[in-house]
Length: 256
Image (cartoon, rainbow, N blue to C red):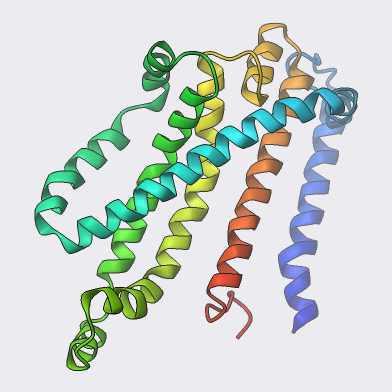
C-alpha cells in the first residue's frame, strides 16, 4: 500500500516531468528554435547556475515581501473574519467592500501604491497583502460559521462563555478552513510581490524577469520563473507542515 502510494504521488509525476523536459529539449534542437523564443531546458539550467549568487539577493527581496504581505493578511484577515461572523451588521457592511476590493485588478492598484508609498518594499508588501487577503477572510469566516449547531447548543448547556465557546468549539472546527485559505494566500502573496516588482523596482525576481524579457534574455526569465515556482512550493509546504503540527487530528488524504 505504501509503495503504491509513493509510486502514485512521486514516481509518476517525476517520470512525466522528466519526459516533458526531454521532449522540450529535443524539440528545440530538432526544429532549431531560436533561444530568445524558446530556450532549451539545458540552456535555462546553465543560465540559472551562472546567476546563482545574484539570484540569492533578488530571491531574498521577493521572499520578505511575500512573507510580509502574507503575515499582514493573516493579522488583518482573521480578526476581520471573526467580526464578520459574530456581527451581522458588520457582515452586511464589510462583505460587499471585501468582494469589491478583490475584484479590482491588483496590477491597476500597484502604480497608485508606488506613487503614494514610494518605491521601497512597502508597496510590494501591500500588493501581496491585497492579493492574499481575500482567501484568508472568506475561508476563516466560512469555517467559523460552519460550526455544527449541536456543538454550540452543547456549549451553551454547559454555560460556557462566548470566548470559551470560540476557543474550544468554533476555532478548532474552523482550523481546516483557515489553513486551506492560508495555503492559497501564501501562493497568491508570491504573485502579489512579483506584480509590485513589475510595476516599479530595481530588485527582486519580478524585476529580473522584467529586465530579462526587455533584453531578450529568455533563459534568464525562465530561470527566474522556475525559482519563483520553487519558492511558492516551499512556502506552501511550510504552511502545510504548520497545519500538521497545529492540527494533528487532520489526517492527510491516503493515511486512513
